Length: 84
Image (tube, rainbow, N blue to C red; front, side, top):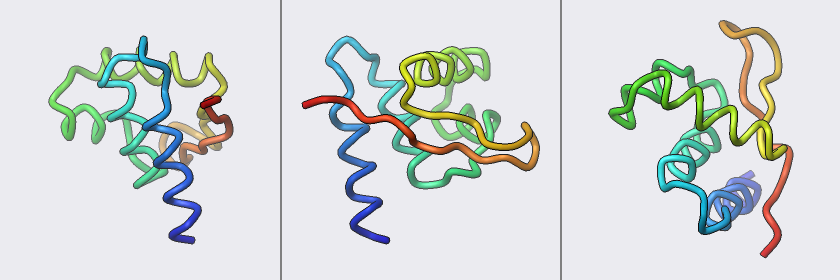
């Protein structure tokens, strides 16, 4: 399982250079805790919930993450990868 975590961390580190650091940090937190909420991301990163929602929308649009289940009991899943 640890190897899988390392592979996902590499995904966050390989986001294209045009991606804001906030997006990488958001993805890293999702990899560490797929059950993390928007509120928890906001508090951890010291950013507004709107900013977090925008970053998540970008990651979803690019096919890197999806939300599985509901807003309250669901979790984030990393489904895509970034080409090297």
